[in-house]
Image 1 (cartoon, one colour):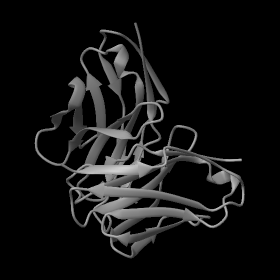
Image 2 (spheres, chains in turn cyan, yellow):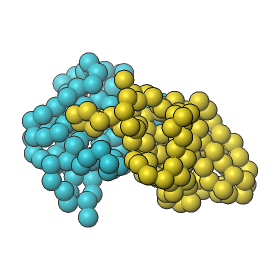
Image 3 (tube, helix red, strand yellow):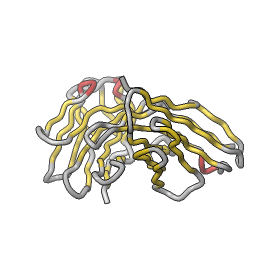
Length: 112
Length: 114
């Protein structure tokens, strides 16, 4: 069966420090992968998506970047965190439009 | 561009009563519609989807949703609410272009009182 792993679960980082959040999917091949951010426990904002290795599309200009070094690995990064980067980050995958997204359990990032 | 509207920030209902969480959408072409539920500090869990076929779709935990093309709505319903249904509910629509991006509504918090 397919599973998605996202870590760490919580993270507290100082302003100006780097960031690396990792998401991996098991049990499937060539998934579409997504990073969402949820602010204030409500709306979800799509940050990046990827349809294949090395293929990254950015939805909003920001302080973050994403990479997909392997088929089932999706990484969210920042060189220097800002206070406004705080939020709940969710990774998700799917195979095609008829299949619902499966979400990871999320990472709570607090920038102090 | 596609969009989803959830007009209610919060819905309050007594346990045992029916519940409805509203969702309207705007999308070019045929919509792919989804409902997700989120419990505190957790990822989103899939409840149900409409792709094609019967306008009434049944999902997990006794939830169902009715697709209404003329009203561009996809309201979530349950005949008898449980306290454990209290959570944040998201409606979402899928775009058919590259990447199959999912656009979410702003969420509706459901509070079921005993």
